[in-house]
Image 1: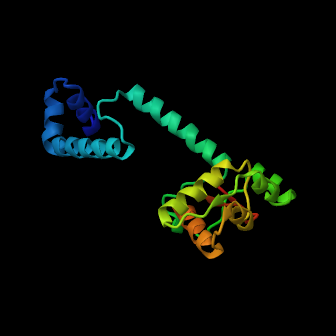
Image 2 (image 1 turned 90 degrees about the horizontal axis):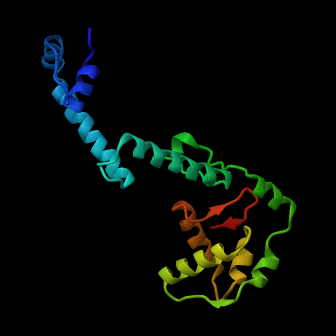
Length: 182
């Protein structure tokens, strides 16, 4: 007996249905199932920001590329939890080889000296941007004191607050060694 998903596939491809398939179509309400699948497909395309006209091959290519991108992020220790309370209840961060190497070194204080000292902006959006720029310029993770030294007049409490916000939004992360990276 032909199943309703076989009937759905034929409907999707615009193929004619046999008498038995028509009976299944009426009995199983495959039109409703097809509408639900179409709505789900549209929502997934929208979530990824992809055009709905992609072929199966193009979808697969994009998913493989996205998978490689996420794998690279995870190697660097960035994990995008969908449900952190469930998936990572202890708030643990992944340990990467870079972090293990960083734990053996002293914090990146010497690296901050290489940074051009800049004034601490007055407005919050500019402070966030300036801190992100410093994090991007550092070749390795740094502690808060080192980051503060990259600015003239930075308030440590404000710097800590911005780093915590960047961490929550995924724009910065704290290593197991307590260092920050962008």
